[in-house]
Every structure is written in structure tokens, then in C-alpha cells.
Image (tube, rainbow, N blue to C red; front, side):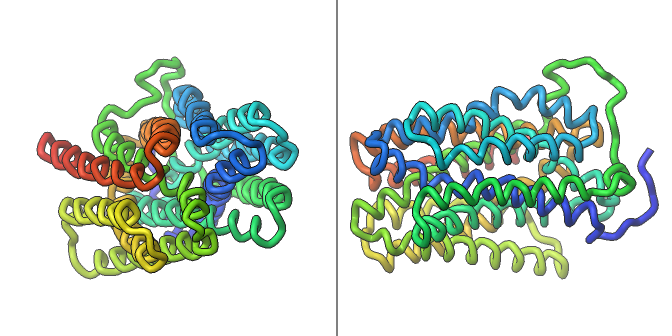
Length: 391
């Protein structure tokens, strides 16, 4: 039974969960631009090795995902989030001591497991702490905060590296995770369970770990993240090759601001009039393709910064719309499975992208990677059209 007492949109559990998801995704993207630089310039590894190190994180999270989805729908989400952060605090403390690619691989695997724990449960919690009439808005704003955290991570990591060096930058990671752990422990039980549904079927089956209704739209997100990883993981190395390493922070900052302002604008307009999500989503994907086109065919500093704005606007339009559409339509007892389905396709897209784009960069260069991403974005738009028509 859903509790009908209105706890308010900005209730304590919701705000603390937003803090948790930021502290989950920031460490993930914080290290993405740093790892290829560290591997290639300090450890002497190749672009392919960089791609594999980035990929094993997502592969570990993907392999754990079925069990984590089941756990999220059958146990208290607060406990799962806290357990994930406890693992992250310990594991992220070892980044600064990694002296080989092998050591980084082990650290990345454990990081992926901890991330999977926190991200799966934190992503399902907004629907449990918001009344039905506010659930769509709550999931939409959660998507915005998630995107902001993903965008802010590289900026923070690169600033820390520029100011204090790679070792100190890595040393800051567990501090972020400690903040997330504290936020998870402060989530009040009465609000955490306000609108929650716990499945009465205690069997562990694959049906409990994947939401079939979410698969088509989540697959579109997977294609988008397949291309996205080319920017988050390899852009810093690309600009170093061109001699533009001083613009990397500006690029990620412009992307983050463009994405946030776009999402907030869309949300405010949506409060005044009903928006048609289909053309907006297509527009967003087309803009991301345009951002990749600028990176693939132009090499000036001004062009790169324009690309950041274009890509940020596109991502800010379509990602929260797709995210909210999946979570808001999920059955109450399948919220963990729905969020796990999103994460599964994100993991698959980013795992494949890390390895494939690393190999492409080794043989054809990073400009070729971004040209290929144009095609990937067009495929994502086509896939979304097919998904909508089949509903």
C-alpha cells in the first residue's frame, strides 16, 4: 500500500539521495580523463590499455547488476547505498598507490562493484520518497542532478591534477565517497519507506533483475553512452596531442553549464505547457551528433569550445527525458529492476566504447573516433524512432 501522506517534494530523504548519487558518479567520471593520461604518460601504456582500464569498471558493474537489482527491490535501499559507499571509500584510497596497469585493473573492478551497489539503489530511491503526483518531476530532476554530477567529475579531477598533481588528485577520491556515505546514513527510515513497495516474491530470477518494458528505451541510452565515453575518457588525451591541454577544463565546464541550463530551461517551460518529448529527444540526439562533428572535422580552440556547448545542450535535452520516461512508467515493485536496466545498457555502451574507441584511436587517431561517433548518434536517433513507433 502506498502511503498517502504528502512529504513534500524537497523532503530530506530525496535531497540526501541526490547527494548520494552525485558522490557516486563524480568519482566515476573524476578519474576518466585522468586514467588515460596516467597510463600513457606515467605508466607507459597504450591507448588500448587505457580503454581496457576504463572498460573493466563498467564490466564489473554489469556482471554484478542482476544481483544488485534483485537486492534493491527486496532490501532497504539506504543500507545498500551505504554498503556501496563503504566499499568505495576503501577502494578509492588505493588509486594513488597504483604503480602498474595490473594494479589499476584490480582497483577498477572493485570500484565498479561499489559503484553498482550505490548507483542502483540510489537511482531507484527517488520513486520511493515522492508521492505519485510528483514522481515524474522527481525522477526528471534526479536525471538532471545525475547528468550534472557526470559532467562535474572531469572538471574537478582535471582541476585537482593541474593544481596538485596526479597523486594528490587521486587522494581526494575517498573524501568524496565519505561525504556520500554520511548522506546515505542520514536518510530517515520513515521517509525512505514512505512510498516504497517491496516484492513479496523472494526468489532470485532474471525476471527480477531486468524490466522488459524499460529495455527498448534503455538500449537507446546505451547507444548514446557508447559515443559519450569518447569524450569523457579520451578528450583530454586528444587535446594533449594537439597542444591544447589548457582548454580541457574549459571544455568540460562549458559542457556542464550548457547541459544544466538547458535541462532547467526545459523543466521550467514544461511547467507552463505540455511538451512533446519525442521531437525534443530527437533534437537532443541530433545536437550531440553535431558536437561530435565539430570535434571530428575541426581542430581550433574556439571550435572545440563551441562543440562543448552544442553537445551539452543536446545531452541536457534528451538524457533526462529518456531517464524519466523509463523510471516513471516502471511498476512499483520493479523500480530497482528498471534502474538496473538503465545502468546495464549504460555499462554495456561505455564498456564497448572504451575498448573500441581506444583501439580506433591507436590505429586512426582521435579525430576518427569522433567522426565515428556522428554515425553512432544518428543510429541512436533512428533506434529511438523505432522504439516510439512500436509502442
